[in-house]
Length: 439
Image 1: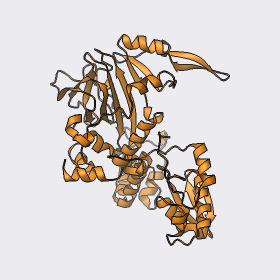
Image 2: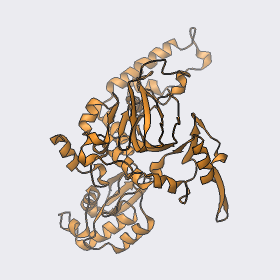
Image 3: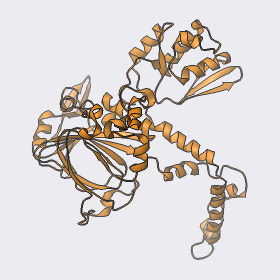
Image 4: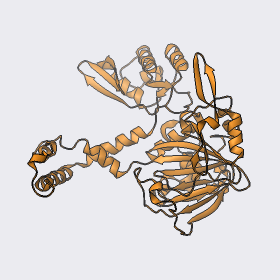
Protein backbone atom coordinates (compact mmCIF):
# COMPACT_ATOMS: atom_id res chain seq x y z
CA UNK A 1 0.00 0.00 0.00
CA UNK A 2 1.45 3.39 -1.00
CA UNK A 3 2.08 6.20 1.47
CA UNK A 4 -0.42 8.28 -0.50
CA UNK A 5 -3.14 5.69 0.03
CA UNK A 6 -2.24 5.28 3.70
CA UNK A 7 -2.83 9.02 4.14
CA UNK A 8 -6.16 8.69 2.35
CA UNK A 9 -7.28 5.88 4.67
CA UNK A 10 -6.29 7.93 7.70
CA UNK A 11 -8.14 11.01 6.48
CA UNK A 12 -11.67 11.77 7.68
CA UNK A 13 -14.58 10.63 5.56
CA UNK A 14 -16.06 13.47 3.46
CA UNK A 15 -18.84 15.44 5.13
CA UNK A 16 -18.08 13.81 8.47
CA UNK A 17 -20.64 11.06 8.01
CA UNK A 18 -18.84 8.13 9.54
CA UNK A 19 -15.64 6.27 10.23
CA UNK A 20 -13.38 4.27 7.97
CA UNK A 21 -11.95 4.87 4.51
CA UNK A 22 -13.57 7.11 1.93
CA UNK A 23 -15.86 5.39 -0.60
CA UNK A 24 -13.27 5.55 -3.42
CA UNK A 25 -10.54 4.11 -1.20
CA UNK A 26 -12.87 1.39 0.03
CA UNK A 27 -14.04 0.35 -3.45
CA UNK A 28 -10.85 0.76 -5.47
CA UNK A 29 -7.98 1.22 -3.02
CA UNK A 30 -7.11 4.51 -4.68
CA UNK A 31 -7.08 8.21 -3.93
CA UNK A 32 -9.45 10.78 -5.45
CA UNK A 33 -6.48 12.42 -7.17
CA UNK A 34 -5.40 9.24 -8.94
CA UNK A 35 -8.99 8.30 -9.81
CA UNK A 36 -9.54 11.77 -11.30
CA UNK A 37 -6.33 11.70 -13.33
CA UNK A 38 -6.59 8.17 -14.73
CA UNK A 39 -10.26 7.14 -14.88
CA UNK A 40 -12.94 9.79 -14.22
CA UNK A 41 -14.90 10.26 -17.45
CA UNK A 42 -12.07 8.46 -19.28
CA UNK A 43 -11.64 4.71 -18.79
CA UNK A 44 -13.10 1.74 -16.88
CA UNK A 45 -11.47 0.57 -13.65
CA UNK A 46 -11.80 -2.97 -12.28
CA UNK A 47 -10.35 -3.84 -8.87
CA UNK A 48 -10.65 -7.28 -7.28
CA UNK A 49 -11.35 -7.53 -3.56
CA UNK A 50 -8.03 -9.26 -2.92
CA UNK A 51 -6.09 -6.57 -4.81
CA UNK A 52 -7.24 -3.72 -2.58
CA UNK A 53 -4.97 -4.82 0.25
CA UNK A 54 -5.80 -6.53 3.52
CA UNK A 55 -7.25 -3.40 5.15
CA UNK A 56 -9.77 -2.96 2.31
CA UNK A 57 -10.47 -6.53 1.23
CA UNK A 58 -13.92 -6.64 2.87
CA UNK A 59 -16.97 -7.12 0.70
CA UNK A 60 -20.03 -4.93 0.37
CA UNK A 61 -22.67 -6.96 2.22
CA UNK A 62 -22.62 -4.45 5.08
CA UNK A 63 -24.29 -2.04 2.63
CA UNK A 64 -26.93 -4.62 1.68
CA UNK A 65 -26.92 -8.37 2.34
CA UNK A 66 -29.04 -11.21 0.90
CA UNK A 67 -30.92 -11.26 4.22
CA UNK A 68 -31.62 -7.53 3.79
CA UNK A 69 -33.12 -8.18 0.35
CA UNK A 70 -35.41 -10.83 1.85
CA UNK A 71 -36.45 -8.41 4.60
CA UNK A 72 -37.21 -5.59 2.14
CA UNK A 73 -39.37 -7.87 0.01
CA UNK A 74 -40.96 -9.51 3.03
CA UNK A 75 -41.67 -8.08 6.48
CA UNK A 76 -40.43 -4.55 5.67
CA UNK A 77 -42.94 -4.33 2.81
CA UNK A 78 -41.01 -2.25 0.28
CA UNK A 79 -43.52 -0.63 -2.10
CA UNK A 80 -43.40 0.00 -5.82
CA UNK A 81 -41.80 1.78 -7.62
CA UNK A 82 -38.93 0.92 -5.26
CA UNK A 83 -38.92 -2.61 -6.66
CA UNK A 84 -39.68 -4.20 -10.02
CA UNK A 85 -38.99 -7.42 -11.94
CA UNK A 86 -37.36 -7.63 -15.37
CA UNK A 87 -36.90 -10.54 -17.77
CA UNK A 88 -34.88 -10.22 -21.01
CA UNK A 89 -34.96 -6.43 -20.71
CA UNK A 90 -38.76 -6.28 -20.34
CA UNK A 91 -40.39 -5.13 -17.11
CA UNK A 92 -43.01 -7.62 -15.92
CA UNK A 93 -46.56 -6.50 -15.05
CA UNK A 94 -46.74 -5.36 -11.43
CA UNK A 95 -49.76 -7.58 -10.87
CA UNK A 96 -47.50 -10.62 -11.21
CA UNK A 97 -45.35 -9.76 -8.18
CA UNK A 98 -47.41 -7.41 -5.96
CA UNK A 99 -50.28 -7.90 -3.56
CA UNK A 100 -52.90 -5.75 -1.83
CA UNK A 101 -53.34 -5.19 1.90
CA UNK A 102 -55.12 -2.80 4.24
CA UNK A 103 -53.27 -0.04 6.10
CA UNK A 104 -55.76 1.62 8.42
CA UNK A 105 -58.70 2.58 6.26
CA UNK A 106 -56.71 2.52 3.02
CA UNK A 107 -56.19 -0.31 0.58
CA UNK A 108 -52.61 -0.59 -0.70
CA UNK A 109 -52.11 -2.48 -3.93
CA UNK A 110 -48.35 -2.15 -4.42
CA UNK A 111 -46.81 -4.33 -1.71
CA UNK A 112 -44.42 -7.18 -2.57
CA UNK A 113 -45.99 -10.61 -3.06
CA UNK A 114 -43.25 -13.02 -1.90
CA UNK A 115 -44.84 -15.95 -3.76
CA UNK A 116 -45.11 -14.02 -7.03
CA UNK A 117 -41.56 -12.72 -6.67
CA UNK A 118 -40.21 -16.20 -5.96
CA UNK A 119 -42.09 -17.70 -8.92
CA UNK A 120 -40.89 -15.05 -11.41
CA UNK A 121 -37.36 -15.18 -10.05
CA UNK A 122 -37.25 -18.96 -10.48
CA UNK A 123 -38.39 -18.47 -14.08
CA UNK A 124 -35.44 -16.18 -14.83
CA UNK A 125 -36.62 -12.69 -13.81
CA UNK A 126 -34.25 -10.22 -12.19
CA UNK A 127 -35.40 -8.39 -9.05
CA UNK A 128 -34.59 -4.68 -9.34
CA UNK A 129 -34.58 -2.55 -6.20
CA UNK A 130 -34.80 1.07 -7.38
CA UNK A 131 -33.35 4.15 -5.66
CA UNK A 132 -32.60 2.10 -2.58
CA UNK A 133 -30.38 4.88 -1.18
CA UNK A 134 -33.65 6.64 -0.28
CA UNK A 135 -34.95 3.87 1.97
CA UNK A 136 -31.95 1.82 3.18
CA UNK A 137 -29.79 3.73 5.72
CA UNK A 138 -26.42 2.11 4.97
CA UNK A 139 -26.75 2.87 1.26
CA UNK A 140 -27.96 6.38 2.01
CA UNK A 141 -24.84 7.13 4.06
CA UNK A 142 -22.54 5.54 1.44
CA UNK A 143 -24.10 7.57 -1.37
CA UNK A 144 -23.92 10.79 0.63
CA UNK A 145 -20.23 10.23 1.40
CA UNK A 146 -19.55 9.43 -2.26
CA UNK A 147 -21.44 12.55 -3.39
CA UNK A 148 -19.30 14.68 -1.08
CA UNK A 149 -16.12 13.04 -2.39
CA UNK A 150 -16.99 13.36 -6.10
CA UNK A 151 -19.05 16.56 -6.03
CA UNK A 152 -21.96 15.05 -7.96
CA UNK A 153 -25.31 13.47 -7.14
CA UNK A 154 -25.41 9.72 -6.59
CA UNK A 155 -28.09 7.02 -6.55
CA UNK A 156 -28.22 3.26 -6.05
CA UNK A 157 -30.13 0.41 -7.69
CA UNK A 158 -29.77 -3.24 -6.72
CA UNK A 159 -30.03 -6.16 -9.15
CA UNK A 160 -30.77 -9.70 -7.96
CA UNK A 161 -30.38 -12.05 -10.92
CA UNK A 162 -31.09 -15.81 -10.84
CA UNK A 163 -28.63 -18.36 -12.29
CA UNK A 164 -28.28 -18.42 -16.07
CA UNK A 165 -30.18 -15.18 -16.67
CA UNK A 166 -29.57 -11.77 -18.22
CA UNK A 167 -31.51 -8.73 -17.04
CA UNK A 168 -30.69 -6.28 -19.86
CA UNK A 169 -29.24 -6.55 -23.37
CA UNK A 170 -26.09 -4.59 -24.33
CA UNK A 171 -26.70 -0.90 -23.65
CA UNK A 172 -25.01 2.21 -22.36
CA UNK A 173 -25.92 4.40 -19.41
CA UNK A 174 -26.06 8.18 -19.66
CA UNK A 175 -24.33 8.53 -16.29
CA UNK A 176 -21.17 6.97 -14.88
CA UNK A 177 -21.63 3.93 -12.63
CA UNK A 178 -19.91 1.95 -9.91
CA UNK A 179 -20.73 -1.76 -9.88
CA UNK A 180 -20.20 -3.41 -6.50
CA UNK A 181 -20.58 -7.19 -6.41
CA UNK A 182 -22.29 -8.17 -3.15
CA UNK A 183 -23.06 -11.87 -3.53
CA UNK A 184 -22.64 -14.60 -6.16
CA UNK A 185 -20.94 -14.16 -9.52
CA UNK A 186 -21.79 -12.33 -12.73
CA UNK A 187 -20.17 -12.32 -16.16
CA UNK A 188 -19.68 -8.82 -17.58
CA UNK A 189 -18.96 -7.95 -21.20
CA UNK A 190 -17.93 -4.34 -21.87
CA UNK A 191 -17.40 -2.66 -25.24
CA UNK A 192 -16.08 0.80 -26.12
CA UNK A 193 -18.67 3.56 -26.54
CA UNK A 194 -20.67 3.97 -29.72
CA UNK A 195 -21.38 7.53 -28.51
CA UNK A 196 -18.70 9.17 -26.40
CA UNK A 197 -20.02 10.65 -23.12
CA UNK A 198 -23.70 10.55 -24.10
CA UNK A 199 -26.13 13.00 -22.49
CA UNK A 200 -29.49 12.07 -20.97
CA UNK A 201 -31.05 12.90 -24.33
CA UNK A 202 -28.91 10.21 -26.03
CA UNK A 203 -30.17 6.86 -24.66
CA UNK A 204 -28.75 3.65 -26.06
CA UNK A 205 -32.13 2.66 -27.52
CA UNK A 206 -31.39 5.27 -30.22
CA UNK A 207 -28.43 3.12 -31.37
CA UNK A 208 -30.67 0.39 -32.80
CA UNK A 209 -31.00 -3.30 -31.92
CA UNK A 210 -27.26 -4.09 -32.17
CA UNK A 211 -25.17 -1.25 -30.70
CA UNK A 212 -22.12 -3.52 -30.32
CA UNK A 213 -21.91 -4.21 -34.06
CA UNK A 214 -19.66 -7.28 -33.83
CA UNK A 215 -16.78 -5.43 -32.14
CA UNK A 216 -14.49 -7.28 -29.75
CA UNK A 217 -15.10 -6.62 -26.03
CA UNK A 218 -12.79 -4.38 -24.09
CA UNK A 219 -13.49 -6.29 -20.84
CA UNK A 220 -14.78 -9.86 -20.60
CA UNK A 221 -14.71 -11.06 -17.00
CA UNK A 222 -16.64 -12.45 -14.04
CA UNK A 223 -17.19 -10.30 -10.95
CA UNK A 224 -17.09 -12.05 -7.59
CA UNK A 225 -18.07 -10.82 -4.11
CA UNK A 226 -16.11 -7.72 -3.13
CA UNK A 227 -15.06 -6.82 -6.68
CA UNK A 228 -15.65 -3.24 -7.82
CA UNK A 229 -16.01 -1.86 -11.36
CA UNK A 230 -16.19 1.75 -12.56
CA UNK A 231 -17.70 2.50 -15.98
CA UNK A 232 -17.78 5.99 -17.50
CA UNK A 233 -21.03 6.78 -19.24
CA UNK A 234 -21.28 5.55 -22.81
CA UNK A 235 -19.46 2.22 -22.41
CA UNK A 236 -21.68 -0.53 -23.80
CA UNK A 237 -22.19 -3.37 -21.34
CA UNK A 238 -24.26 -6.42 -20.54
CA UNK A 239 -24.12 -8.87 -17.65
CA UNK A 240 -25.24 -12.47 -17.25
CA UNK A 241 -25.14 -14.92 -14.36
CA UNK A 242 -23.49 -18.31 -14.73
CA UNK A 243 -24.45 -21.23 -12.48
CA UNK A 244 -24.80 -18.94 -9.47
CA UNK A 245 -27.24 -16.17 -8.61
CA UNK A 246 -25.91 -12.64 -8.32
CA UNK A 247 -26.59 -9.57 -6.21
CA UNK A 248 -24.83 -6.37 -7.20
CA UNK A 249 -25.20 -2.67 -6.48
CA UNK A 250 -25.11 -0.16 -9.30
CA UNK A 251 -24.25 3.28 -7.98
CA UNK A 252 -25.12 5.98 -10.50
CA UNK A 253 -22.81 9.02 -10.58
CA UNK A 254 -24.82 11.92 -12.01
CA UNK A 255 -21.93 14.14 -13.05
CA UNK A 256 -22.39 17.84 -13.71
CA UNK A 257 -21.33 18.60 -17.28
CA UNK A 258 -20.12 21.90 -18.73
CA UNK A 259 -23.40 21.93 -20.63
CA UNK A 260 -25.18 21.95 -17.24
CA UNK A 261 -23.03 24.88 -16.13
CA UNK A 262 -23.80 26.74 -19.34
CA UNK A 263 -27.54 26.08 -18.85
CA UNK A 264 -27.36 27.54 -15.32
CA UNK A 265 -25.44 30.57 -16.54
CA UNK A 266 -27.86 31.19 -19.42
CA UNK A 267 -30.59 31.80 -16.85
CA UNK A 268 -28.83 35.13 -16.15
CA UNK A 269 -28.25 36.08 -19.78
CA UNK A 270 -29.72 39.46 -20.67
CA UNK A 271 -29.92 40.69 -17.07
CA UNK A 272 -26.93 43.01 -17.38
CA UNK A 273 -26.65 46.44 -18.92
CA UNK A 274 -25.51 47.42 -22.40
CA UNK A 275 -26.80 46.95 -25.91
CA UNK A 276 -25.93 43.24 -25.99
CA UNK A 277 -28.16 42.49 -22.97
CA UNK A 278 -30.95 44.63 -24.37
CA UNK A 279 -30.75 42.66 -27.63
CA UNK A 280 -31.17 39.37 -25.71
CA UNK A 281 -34.25 40.76 -23.96
CA UNK A 282 -36.01 41.71 -27.19
CA UNK A 283 -38.87 39.52 -28.46
CA UNK A 284 -38.61 37.54 -31.69
CA UNK A 285 -39.99 39.41 -34.69
CA UNK A 286 -43.57 38.72 -35.66
CA UNK A 287 -44.13 36.68 -38.83
CA UNK A 288 -45.39 39.81 -40.62
CA UNK A 289 -41.97 41.41 -40.05
CA UNK A 290 -40.17 38.56 -41.82
CA UNK A 291 -37.48 39.35 -44.37
CA UNK A 292 -35.74 36.91 -46.69
CA UNK A 293 -36.37 33.16 -47.14
CA UNK A 294 -36.53 32.40 -43.40
CA UNK A 295 -37.42 35.86 -42.22
CA UNK A 296 -34.73 35.91 -39.52
CA UNK A 297 -31.37 36.47 -41.23
CA UNK A 298 -30.63 39.93 -39.87
CA UNK A 299 -32.13 39.15 -36.47
CA UNK A 300 -30.03 36.00 -36.12
CA UNK A 301 -26.90 38.04 -36.83
CA UNK A 302 -27.85 40.52 -34.09
CA UNK A 303 -28.57 37.67 -31.70
CA UNK A 304 -25.24 35.98 -32.43
CA UNK A 305 -23.30 39.20 -31.78
CA UNK A 306 -25.19 39.79 -28.52
CA UNK A 307 -24.64 36.19 -27.34
CA UNK A 308 -20.91 36.33 -28.12
CA UNK A 309 -20.62 39.68 -26.32
CA UNK A 310 -22.36 38.18 -23.28
CA UNK A 311 -20.00 35.19 -23.27
CA UNK A 312 -16.97 37.45 -23.59
CA UNK A 313 -17.92 39.52 -20.53
CA UNK A 314 -18.76 36.46 -18.40
CA UNK A 315 -16.36 36.52 -15.44
CA UNK A 316 -14.70 33.48 -13.90
CA UNK A 317 -16.30 34.13 -10.51
CA UNK A 318 -19.79 33.69 -11.99
CA UNK A 319 -18.82 30.31 -13.44
CA UNK A 320 -17.21 29.20 -10.18
CA UNK A 321 -20.32 30.19 -8.21
CA UNK A 322 -22.49 28.01 -10.45
CA UNK A 323 -20.10 25.04 -10.07
CA UNK A 324 -19.99 25.53 -6.28
CA UNK A 325 -23.79 25.60 -6.11
CA UNK A 326 -24.04 22.38 -8.12
CA UNK A 327 -21.55 20.68 -5.80
CA UNK A 328 -23.40 21.82 -2.69
CA UNK A 329 -26.66 20.47 -4.08
CA UNK A 330 -25.00 17.10 -4.80
CA UNK A 331 -24.92 16.14 -1.10
CA UNK A 332 -28.48 15.24 0.01
CA UNK A 333 -29.96 16.53 3.22
CA UNK A 334 -29.33 14.35 6.27
CA UNK A 335 -32.62 13.06 7.75
CA UNK A 336 -33.35 13.79 11.39
CA UNK A 337 -35.47 11.78 13.79
CA UNK A 338 -38.33 13.99 15.05
CA UNK A 339 -38.36 12.36 18.49
CA UNK A 340 -34.60 12.31 19.07
CA UNK A 341 -34.27 15.86 17.74
CA UNK A 342 -36.99 17.12 20.10
CA UNK A 343 -35.39 15.38 23.05
CA UNK A 344 -31.97 16.85 22.22
CA UNK A 345 -33.42 20.37 21.98
CA UNK A 346 -35.09 20.02 25.40
CA UNK A 347 -32.23 18.35 27.26
CA UNK A 348 -29.01 19.81 25.80
CA UNK A 349 -26.61 20.40 28.70
CA UNK A 350 -23.50 22.55 29.03
CA UNK A 351 -21.26 19.85 27.55
CA UNK A 352 -23.76 18.41 25.06
CA UNK A 353 -22.06 18.22 21.67
CA UNK A 354 -23.85 19.22 18.46
CA UNK A 355 -22.80 19.54 14.82
CA UNK A 356 -24.17 21.09 11.61
CA UNK A 357 -26.70 18.97 9.75
CA UNK A 358 -25.10 17.44 6.66
CA UNK A 359 -26.40 18.79 3.35
CA UNK A 360 -28.18 21.79 4.90
CA UNK A 361 -27.28 25.08 3.22
CA UNK A 362 -27.62 27.91 5.72
CA UNK A 363 -26.73 31.54 5.05
CA UNK A 364 -26.15 34.23 7.70
CA UNK A 365 -27.20 37.79 6.84
CA UNK A 366 -27.14 40.95 8.95
CA UNK A 367 -30.41 42.94 8.85
CA UNK A 368 -30.13 46.10 10.93
CA UNK A 369 -29.84 45.17 14.60
CA UNK A 370 -30.86 41.56 13.83
CA UNK A 371 -29.02 38.65 12.24
CA UNK A 372 -30.98 36.29 10.04
CA UNK A 373 -30.29 32.66 9.25
CA UNK A 374 -31.71 31.70 5.89
CA UNK A 375 -32.36 27.96 5.58
CA UNK A 376 -33.99 26.77 2.39
CA UNK A 377 -37.32 28.64 2.36
CA UNK A 378 -37.17 29.62 6.06
CA UNK A 379 -35.69 32.63 7.84
CA UNK A 380 -34.75 32.37 11.53
CA UNK A 381 -34.08 35.69 13.25
CA UNK A 382 -31.71 36.36 16.19
CA UNK A 383 -30.41 39.43 18.03
CA UNK A 384 -27.50 40.91 16.10
CA UNK A 385 -24.97 40.39 18.90
CA UNK A 386 -25.12 36.57 18.51
CA UNK A 387 -23.72 36.70 14.96
CA UNK A 388 -20.15 35.55 15.87
CA UNK A 389 -21.49 32.69 17.99
CA UNK A 390 -23.99 31.71 15.29
CA UNK A 391 -21.27 31.54 12.65
CA UNK A 392 -19.08 29.48 15.01
CA UNK A 393 -21.94 27.01 15.66
CA UNK A 394 -22.46 26.57 11.91
CA UNK A 395 -18.75 26.03 11.27
CA UNK A 396 -18.38 22.72 13.09
CA UNK A 397 -19.00 20.66 16.23
CA UNK A 398 -19.58 22.66 19.41
CA UNK A 399 -21.25 22.63 22.82
CA UNK A 400 -22.55 25.45 25.04
CA UNK A 401 -19.37 25.37 27.15
CA UNK A 402 -16.99 25.22 24.16
CA UNK A 403 -18.86 28.01 22.38
CA UNK A 404 -18.70 30.19 25.49
CA UNK A 405 -14.96 29.58 25.77
CA UNK A 406 -14.15 30.28 22.13
CA UNK A 407 -14.03 34.07 22.37
CA UNK A 408 -17.26 34.81 20.45
CA UNK A 409 -18.77 37.04 23.17
CA UNK A 410 -21.41 34.67 24.55
CA UNK A 411 -21.74 33.07 27.98
CA UNK A 412 -22.63 29.42 28.59
CA UNK A 413 -26.31 30.09 29.37
CA UNK A 414 -26.88 32.12 26.22
CA UNK A 415 -24.89 29.58 24.18
CA UNK A 416 -27.19 26.86 25.47
CA UNK A 417 -30.27 28.87 24.41
CA UNK A 418 -28.77 29.47 20.95
CA UNK A 419 -27.82 25.84 20.34
CA UNK A 420 -31.18 24.55 21.57
CA UNK A 421 -32.91 26.92 19.14
CA UNK A 422 -30.75 25.65 16.28
CA UNK A 423 -31.63 22.07 17.26
CA UNK A 424 -35.35 22.94 17.21
CA UNK A 425 -34.90 24.51 13.77
CA UNK A 426 -33.18 21.28 12.63
CA UNK A 427 -30.05 23.20 11.63
CA UNK A 428 -27.87 21.32 14.13
CA UNK A 429 -28.06 17.67 15.21
CA UNK A 430 -26.55 15.82 18.18
CA UNK A 431 -22.86 15.21 17.44
CA UNK A 432 -23.15 11.55 18.41
CA UNK A 433 -25.94 10.90 15.92
CA UNK A 434 -25.01 8.41 13.21
CA UNK A 435 -26.32 9.70 9.85
CA UNK A 436 -28.90 7.43 8.26
CA UNK A 437 -30.49 7.28 4.86
CA UNK A 438 -31.14 10.29 2.71
CA UNK A 439 -33.88 12.82 2.25
